Amino acid sequence: RTTVARGDVIDVSAAAHDPAGKPLTFTWSTASPDQGTFEHPDAASATFRCRAANENLPLTLRLAAADCVQQISQTVVCR
Image 1 (cartoon, rainbow, N blue to C red):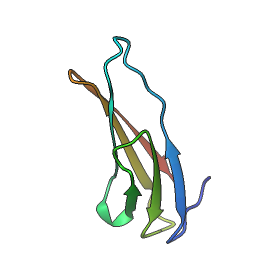
Image 2: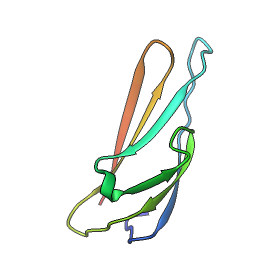
Image 3: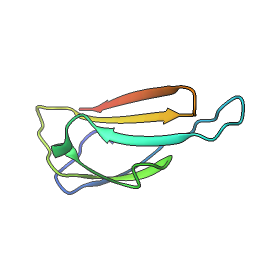
Image 4: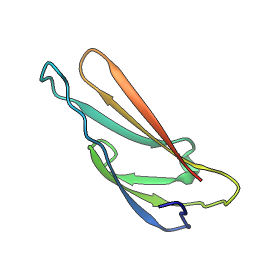
């Protein structure tokens, strides 16, 4: 999907595992709180509702996955 309008709902998901088998925690976020909100932002799969859409600004979604020792994160920019 390349365009997002105000009020659009996007399903996002991630797959990750810890090589040592430790449980992972997930945290979804946006670059700016006014971009929208997540349902279940602490799950591997979440639903994002877009609050503001501006054709000139990218929508930036972030995901962090962590075990009890370290955290990795990935940022996706939708234009």
